[in-house]
Amino acid sequence: MTGVSIIQKYQETQLAIKLISLGGRIQMLESETNLSRNKLIKLYKEIQGCPPPKGLLPFSTSWFMTWEPNIHASIFYNAYSFLVRNGLKSGIQTILKAYQLYLEQCQFSHKEEPILGLTRAWILVKFVEKNIMQQSCCTVCRGLFITHAYHPQNTFTCSLCQPPSRADKNNKTQKENDEKCLKVLSKQSHLNSSVSHQITA
Image (cartoon, rainbow, N blue to C red; front, side, top):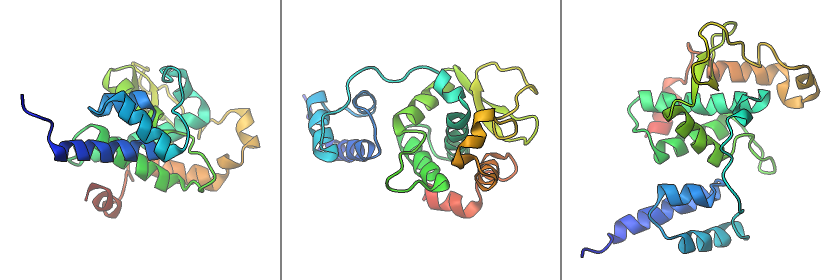
């Protein structure tokens, strides 16, 4: 019986370290690597300084449809879709590149937790692949946003164009932030070529 390649084991360990550092849950790591659960737990404790959280992954689609998470999920998925269209294979490495781009676009501070965690981003890709969710075009701004699958065409208005009343109380919905989100989400702009070269290199 042939043994596991040392290089492959090293690459999977490096991937696990990267996923844990970005907040990936153990169930996600088990799905994307061939490392044992015990090794993954040890890695998690060493990197995060605490045991991994217990419980099931957040499999509900409802979270992605609330107003602010929907904007962030849509920014991430636009980046992921852009990368796949421009030659990267779908999968965990492309999810990581898209997630890093999402973090750069939203410019979170070191003390601030991203609205969209890596595990939820990973789950979102699975939801779209399984036709549970999809991208729909906003009838007002023409940006592409995450919606439930089979949402009727030409009937969707995004939460940037039609924000809920409580959005005015949140500092993150200022005009400048809305314009930045719309620029990333619009069909016409997508991501410019310099950004494309940087994240596909």
